[in-house]
Image (cartoon, rainbow, N blue to C red; front, side, top):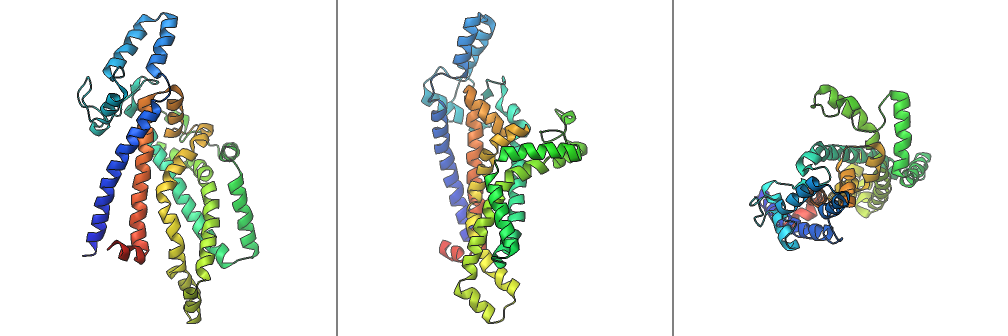
Length: 343
């Protein structure tokens, strides 16, 4: 009986997610097409100025192959996979992510490891944010106006104020000086292009420390401040005072209700936090030479590589929707009031 409301919620959200992704795909495609020209037309103009006839023929072939000589609405339907192109139905719905004109390779090959490395880096930062900020926020709220609370407050302001790229440069320097880690990247340069094995995974874990600290520090500082404020508000409410007056142990009185209630805003923010970490780490990825999708998206937008940019933006949108679904399910489990409301 209890599983039916949750199942219904998931099914409704999956339908909503599909419709939302369809709407986002239209917005993404038409916004990318708004600037005049595209990568191939600009490239053809450069080649004609240089008299390279063979390259011009290849670029014109790509234009016909991907229907870029057709109206924009037809290009969109072919990109999504709702309309047959020169090669039949071959779009996002069919698993064809398009061709990267900048790299002259399929988008799937270009993004390759970058997709899951992006998830690894940002999930590590997400875990770091919660593992560090929650205990510190509990201590700060339960030791208000103490020396430890003052130190945490100062460190929080420093974490919010220091730019991520500056912290990245500092940590890269000392990681190389003290631990011998190579500057930048997510693994030693010798593993580039090699298959994943135990040695490459160990190199990844060693190099993951600095990006996790840099990307997660700002979110950690913000979460400490917010959770401390939420906990202080919950600890001052009558039900907490009554629980203490009846002799409930302090730790149980803290964790049973005030702590759970203070988590609600953060659980609700999971859907926004993951894409925020992805988009917010672009500059850090450039500084640290991280093989994630951030630098690829920046290059794709700069060069008008439309299929590459469109796919990465859709990936971030899908990540947002999945995060929102996860946050809704966790909220249903965490807060009985939401469970009852859903019935």
